[in-house]
Length: 196
Ligand SMILES: [Zn+2]
Image (cartoon, rainbow, N blue to C red; front, side, top):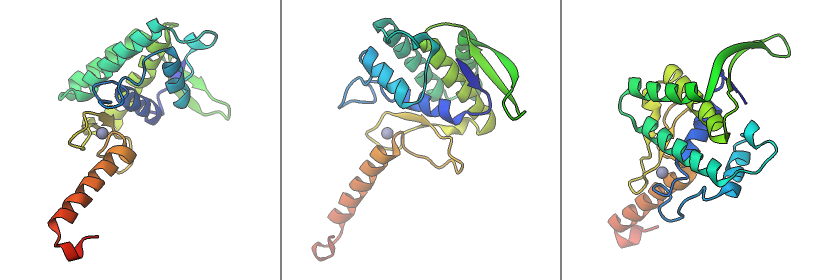
């Protein structure tokens, strides 16, 4: 698998969504990657097509390796020290791939990429996510690695938005949870005749 050094948004989104599949985040729904079928669905949903799974289904060993990567990515995103976060990401990407390589794309535009070393699906996923997280650190800064602002959520995320104002790991879920809670609090605080 090739991973472009020009595009960190995709890999950062995959890292965020992967970390938030864990049972410690999904306290009510539980483990979101329990088996090979769930892992295959996660990869397809994120348009990740590991070479290792080109002609075989994901196995329990792939799932176990992805769970280990998921824990490493969480530690990396939660690290309070930018140099430590960069070192952790560098170790993950260096173990999984090599490069950079310069290639001329159709149309004559140069682009940098790194290549996986033929490890398993988890290594390819490590290369994609860890390379992207280094891109975010370098381009957007360490404060883009954040904890979800919803008080009852243990999710983390990487904000690659232009404005950098993202607050929730899953905005449409955790953001709504806050809005509903605020709405209820306002209702309770307002006199009965003003309740909407
Ligand atoms: Zn959240």
